[in-house]
Length: 309
Image (cartoon, rainbow, N blue to C red; front, side, top):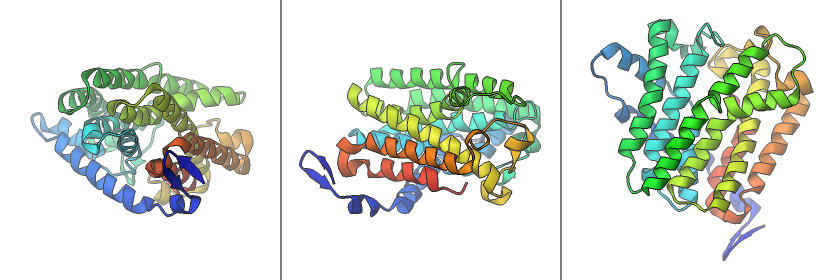
């Protein structure tokens, strides 16, 4: 039993949380906001390319984590929605660029042809650039009822997350590691806590900051997010081996094709599953003080290790 103030939350009550309905409602909210956020104007081709990938579907996990953390910290979805959209714009940029022939070279993403296969490499690069810059503009100009210093903090975190100290740095080391056989677990962790985990962590922490969370709460949520971020990548590595292209919505077996060092390659599949589950348990432990208010984040953590794509 979890105790928080006057609230008592049993394990059974937590298990009864309807994650499927929660995710569906939040996805609909995010999809509508993303559609409104990016109208087509001149030059039409670049906006069409940006919208093609931004509105291609997906779990919308990052914006949902942002909304959930904001609500947990006492804020509202409306306060966090512009930042949630910005996070998805940045994530979409990373996918467009990651799929390019000079990067991970993939023809499919979310079950559709990748951006460069539809619009060409030149427009795909520019579409990613456009989404990245617009993410900051959109969050800065559309956020309401948030203390200015909190919004500035969030924008600074977004900048660091997407730059050389975060996503870009992780991608560089990932590219440099291809074909190498002596990559350590520490190096692999560094790659993925930057390339994948950093944006997941910022998604959670940004939502809390927008709501004016305390430093203690931000630290707890940061640790939660670091754990689920690494667990997410371990599961991704497993699915690359065990899932089909139809399940993944992208090319299966790419890690082996590109001679990438992965967690299953270092640990084996069963140990990788165990490590991911341990990370999720650690993440959920960080949520103990929040009682039932943290049920969405608990359920999302469990979803990360049970998902099929």
